[in-house]
Length: 517
Image (cartoon, rainbow, N blue to C red; front, side, top):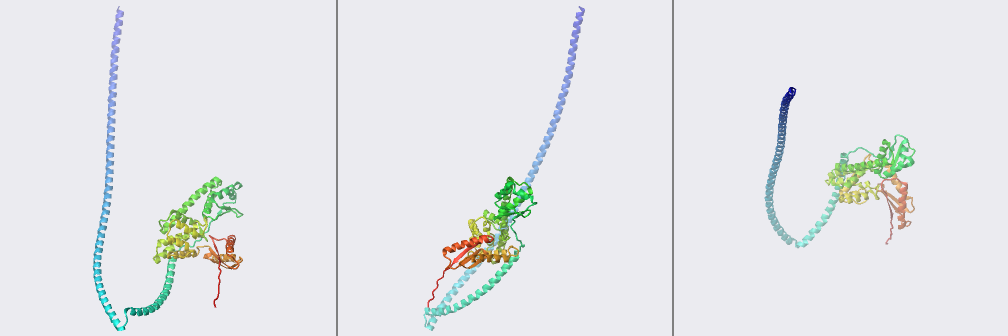
């Protein structure tokens, strides 16, 4: 029994101790949790304060930036308003000045009107008095001479007419002589002034038709296996490549100077690159073609801009740029056209003519040379056709078609363009053809024509651009004359080398005479 009671007592004490220990641990956990909560609240408060301070700082920064932006905008607006006020003040001053000038002019016009009215009244009075005197003198003359008014007029007019005819003839002759002397001196002075003002270096450009190779092995690479590379180059560029025994040289042959330039540049790029194959050849040729097109457009735009010529069709400007790759006897066609434009403009200014129109005509006078290697016809005919297509002035058209004497010059500007063309071509160093070669070509033209049967005389005219053949009418009929012109044309084409075209004209003239006795 006591043992059981002890056991119950021990169990009860254990329960009490367990509860006490549980309460102690619970209290400790509660205190720990409370401290953690307080620490968390303190940390949260600190973070909240930090966030609030940062937000306040950002707000102050944003307010400051907005203030600066507003001040800057306000300053700019003040500056704009100040500039606007200055412009208004200037305009107001200008209006006031113009108003003063207008008032002054009005007053001057009023004074002149009054003066003219006074003069007009005086003239009317004098006219009336003069008429009365003339009438009285006529009556007196009729009484003294016993002649009517019509008879007296007839006698006076006959005498005056005879005297005036003689004086007018002498006056006209004297004025003509004086005008010729003055015009000759003035023309020489204008030409001398123009040549002096427009001085250029002596430059002779030659058509580049030779490409130099770094070594002899490069020829084989350009030819390619079974000639596929050279065929690809010729097909892509439209030129002929001449590969002969000349070491480290390839010649480019083509009547089209633009194609020849594309081929030359493409070959140089391929030689430097070293990759020569049909695909690469086509790629390089396309790239060079685009570059040449850009160069042509830029050259035309530069020429018109430097001359101060505006409102010209873009296609016409592009054709002007094509002249950069066209030469005539070694003289660059674009440079020659620009020179002619400058000189024609200077001479027009000296004579009081339209300087801009003279420059325009000078620049376009050889525009046909941009097409004569592609189309049939002389550069004059092609130039007139092209300028007419793009709506150029009639004076410009006449200057183009008359600068070689093919048609009559209808305007003084046409004469100026022809003179400037001669000056530019005759300048020392401008063309590589010597005087001896020029004479030799004219003689060769006449020699070829004279060797045909029935030819009486031959004349090479227009600087060798036309040959006129006079035939014996008894030996050559009209039908034979046509055939003879073709035979002479074929002989010239086969035996001569010349720029442009040569017109062959066969003239058969029949004259019948009788003498009346």
